[in-house]
Amino acid sequence: MNKLIQIFKIPDLRKKILMVLFWLLVFRVLAAIPIPGIDVARLNEFFSSNQIFGFLNIFSGGGLANLSLVMLGVGPYITAVIIMQLLTIIFPKLKKAYYEEGAEGRAKFNRYSRYLTVPLAALQSYGFLNLLASQQVLPSLSLLQLLSNVAVITAGSVFLMWIGELISEYKMGNGVSLIIFAGIVASLPQLITSSFLTYTPSILPTYIAFVILSIIIIAGVVFVNEGERKIPVSYAKQVRGNKLYGGVATYLPLKVNQAGVIPIIFAISILLFPQFLAQAVSIFSAELSLRLNSLVIGLFNNIYIYSSLYFILVVVFTYFYTAITFDPKEISKNLQRSGGFIPGIRPGEATAETISKIVRRITFFGALFLGIVAILPNVTQIITGIQALTIGGAALLIVVAVALDVMKQVESQLMVREYEGIF
Image 1: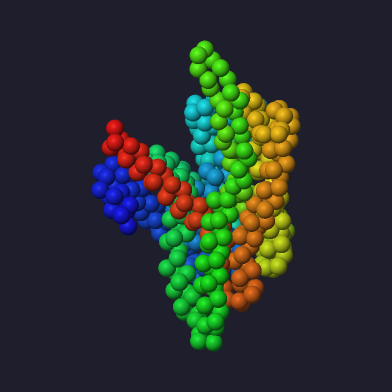
Image 2: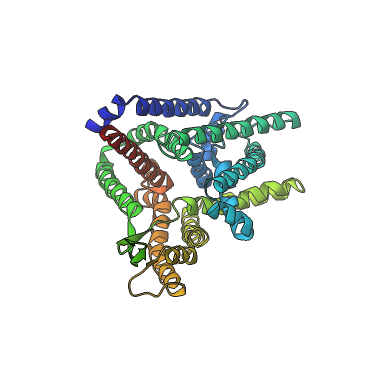
C-alpha cells in the first residue's frame, strides 16, 4: 500500500500509469464496437461450440467474441514476430542483425515485423469473414463489403500494434502483453456472473474445491514462471598494468520456462490450419469445403482428441522454440571472451555441451508445465462437467507473467528514483 501511494506521489510515474490506462481504455472502447450485420445469437453459439476460436478470443483481447473493429487484436503482429524469428534461422544476415548489431539491429527487425503485420492482418481478416459467413454468423457479403471490412479490421490491428508499442515506451510493461492482459481481465465479470447463474446448492463442494485449486494453481504458475537454474560461473584473475581484474564468482540464470507462451501460440496456429485450409478449398468446391469444415469442427469439438493434440503440440513447440532462441555455443563463446568459465568444465565445446544438456533437462519440465497449463480448462470441464468453471490455460499464464513483469518494472523505476534522490 505504501508503494502504491509512493508511485502516485511521483509526477513522472503517475503520468506514465495514467497514459497506459488511457490507451488501454481506448482499446476496450474499440473492442466493444462491432462490424455491421452480425447475428449475435449465432455468434455466441459459434464461439461456445468452438474451442480454438475461444482461445483466439483471448489473444485478440476479447475483441473477436463480438467481431469488433479490432477483432484480430495483436494476433497478426505476434504472428509476424514469430515468422521473423523463424527466418533468423534461414537467413544468417538477419540473425546477425538481430543478435549482434544491438539496438539498431533490433529496430530493423521490429520494422520488418510491422511491415509483415499488414498483409497477415488482411489475410486473417479475409479468412475469418469467409468462415463466419459460411456459419451464417455474418450475411453473405458482396465483394465491396468484404474488402471494406477487411480494410477496417486490418487498420484496427495496425492501430493496436501502434498502441502496444506506445505503451512499451512508457516502460511499464510490454504493450502487446498488456493489451492481451486487459482483454482477459475485462472478461472476468462475465465469467463470475455466469458462475453465479449456474450455481446450485448441490454443487457447493465443487465450487469450494475450485477456489482452493485455483489458488494452488496460481501459486504454482508463479513458482514455475519465476523458477530458474543457476549455473555457477567464475572469472579468471587478470593483471592489466598495475590493476587486478576478475577473480569474481557469479552465475548464469536459465529459466525453467524459457519459451513463455509462444509454444501455445504455435500450437494453436497449427490447430487452426485445417479450418483455414477447408475455407481455401471453397474457391474450387463449396460442397467439399463444407464437408471438410464439418469434419474438422466435429474432430476438434471432441474434448479428448483436442486436448491430446494440444498438449503434444505445446510440448513439441516448447523444445523447438527454445532450440531456435537459445544458443549454448554463443553463450560459451561470450563466456570465453570475457574470461569466464564453469568450474570443472573446460571452456569452448565442453561448456556449450554442458549448458545444452542442462537446458534440455529443464526444458522437459518447462514443456510439461506449459502443456498441463494449456489443457487445464478442458481437464476442469471434464472433471466438473461445468463449462463456467475453467482453471488455468494460456489466460492464467499471461495474467501472471504480465503482472510480474509490470511489478518488476515499476519497482526498478522506483529504485532508480531513490538513487537519484540520494545523489
